[in-house]
Length: 405
Image (cartoon, rainbow, N blue to C red; front, top):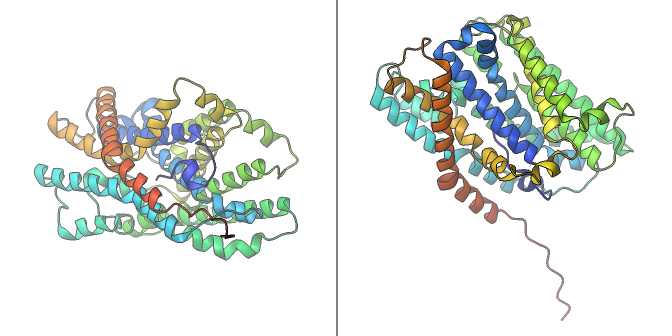
């Protein structure tokens, strides 16, 4: 669900502000989808359909994580030298995910105990223990105000699998030229994506709803979204190294046209808001609908990721007056993702709102404001201090010149 900023995750100078904007958009889309579902707005009208499909923000997060974290492996595959340490990787991943998550979990448990009823119906030791090891995505057992964190189970699974898969496929991408190596990596990404789409479609055929959900939301079920992020890394790194992966001009045009890519993402979002991508509520999707949703959400993620890394965009954003705001929004996006469903639950309880029959726009505004405020506090008091310490503790040592005395 989260990645380091580009300077720390990939050892490149600078920070891609387009990706900070992308993080913020993805977090708000997930918030939008939950508000639409809880208020009942998602079941009605065009706006409701678009809102409830805000869940596609998860696809954006997964693709973004793959884009950031696969960079050292892609650069190595292209024949470049890219430092990578398993210890540094694991420490930084843990520092990025766990402190903010555990703080939000403590608040979720406290609110569940205070509210009781449906909110506290799963407040038992096994459920708490499952969440402490971030295993809710494997069990389907979660708190009403923490349902969105199934994706963290998938994210952490990806963290673990990425170095292993990179090691296993390294021999398959070896070739005489950088162009051939880049193309082989893209082919492997396509193979992984097809496998993920098959797993997603197959999940709709599983008779047991719990196992169907586990497969659908697993790293295998969403492998296509991770593959999209890795493929984007191959394209961006090839471009950086001056490697022409394809002679066709279409990609080069898109890489300089973020507006076109955003428009493509919007079109895919609109199509996904129709029944082609499945029901808007909790009803089960058919295999065709599950496949359509996975593909359309992937198109949105790919378009926005390529738009966020377009040539010249970061330079323009860095020179703009909104640069600081974009960094801030990117920083707090993970905490907004963690806290917004709990905020939604508390708002419903405090204002005595009825589930599926609450005002959409005022609820959306209130939940957004409170979630952003809590996100800021989480970033300032927990996430930034822990991340700073983790990065200082895992800085690669600078080689010292030999003593010639």
